[in-house]
Amino acid sequence: MKAQLTRRRIVAATALAAAGLGGCASTPPPKAEPFKRPLWPALPEQPRFIFEASLRNAASLGDDSSTAQLRRIVVGDDDAGKSFGKPFAVAASRGRVFVTDTEGRRVFVFDVPRRRTFSFGVRREGTLKKPSGIAVDDQGHVYVVDTTARRVVVYDDLGLYIGEINGTELWTRPTAVAVDAAGERVYVVDTGGIDSERHRVTVHGARGALVGEIGRRGSRPGEFNLPGDAAVGPDGTLWVLDAGNFRVQSFDPQGQPLHQFGSPGNGLGQLARPRGLAVGRDGLVFVSDATLCNVQVFQPDGQLLLALGARAERDLPGRYLLPARLATDETGRLYVVDQFLHKIEVLRQLSDAEGRRMQQQGPPPEAAPPA
Image (cartoon, rainbow, N blue to C red):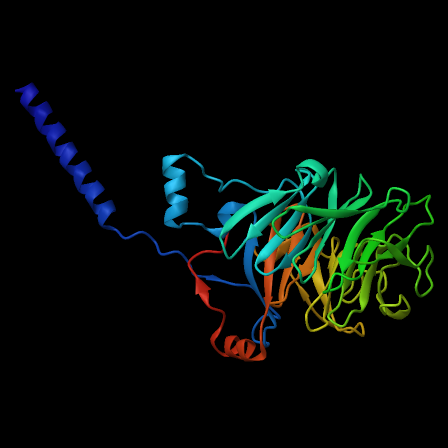
């Protein structure tokens, strides 16, 4: 009798458990809360920029093609974890995003149209010791500053070595490079140091020969104190981030000073710890700041338009902890390096029509934030 009761209790308990599991299974999972891309400025104002994506590793490109799936299944070749160690600078052109990796001693490339990644700078004469600044011209040539070797190495867009500018006798501490669209003028930022008077920009021709020099240590127009970055505008104007003087300066192609703006401080329009500089296709000037944790957008005359991003309480789109170098491309996208959060954020400039539409309808929602 006791055995029968025990069996009945077990059967009843099993039935109750099954009923409970069945009830859980029939309950639909909670819907993911729609993710709204950050906009700048925020609604209800008309937005001018929208967050588009974060690039961290090969998985950021989401290659789910049949070829990629077959490669993962058959040969176990899953490169989704491939990434950069410590990003420093970025350049972008024609769908390729080039990131200098000071820890990996290479250039890591996101080939967005082909949804793949690759790297270069680790072989033969193109080997890099400490890649820092990077730029690309309209021919697809990639210029990489090797700070330790004191040279600028030139590659094609696939990472094949083309040549170099040797600055072992010329530069004290090269950290950044800018190039005009045609590749006819290459500007190398020699940041110098506390005990050096070489705070300047050297100018080189298409074959690397020295053709001029801009600036010296000082605070007057045309002089620099620890220059940190440079970019060439669409009209050929050279823009230099004069970090130690908390300002931005511009020069004509002959190296003559044109304009300057900026002052030290923590307020909007001021510079506290400027780290990166880029110039858009419409002439807008972007400056990243590691203290303010944002990117400020200026008109060429120095008028502040808006600030992109804010300090990160946690890693979220449009939030930064150590924003560094910047880049723009021909599509109007802005690329922001965050060295602490190990990401490259992509922000897209909106047309007036897009901005007005989003002002009326809101940004397009997504199921989850982009990787």
